[in-house]
Length: 232
Image (cartoon, rainbow, N blue to C red; front, side, top):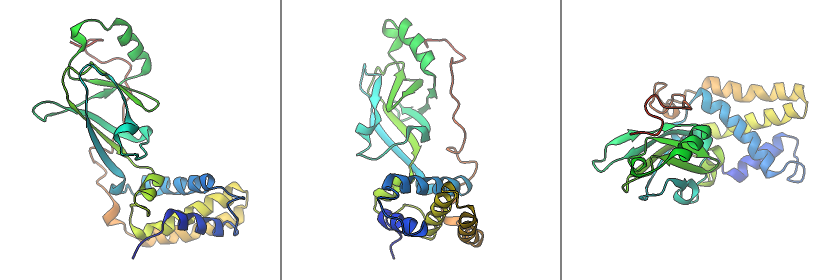
């Protein structure tokens, strides 16, 4: 049996908000409520289905890469990047460190000669662009781990890629938030009882990942690496 599609989740959310129409509450507004509801569940019960990995080859002499071009139209939330690494000729993985834009501005200003063409060790995120340093001197492979957003999980495939029993809980959380932001606090308090009771009675073993997972740590943003500013 299939779970709820995005359209069904939107319709149920609008029904729970008082049978409002799309003119009253747009799809973007409903999706935002659903996303916020999902954030809470994902924070408490990290669904392994959110993990995603993509790989693509780097080009010799090219240091800037637009991610959407390599994701088959999938929606990548760069804020949800968990780790970035480069695979060398021996298929050995080399994690690379995220740096700040101010660090990159300094590096770019001083970058000269062949010393700055090597296996990348650092990256900078600028909007939907990854900038690597040093510039690749070979056709390495870059590997990115990131977390999908709820909308991405719903749209590809058509239903959320999370345990089916939790689809309704996401909707009820969205209804609770919608009522709260409309300042209908009594109805919001009453609505919150439904998802809470289901969460307490559910044990999402199949949807939980190890808390000490390699991808569960916080990403540190560096301004300067401990070793040389421009690398070897």
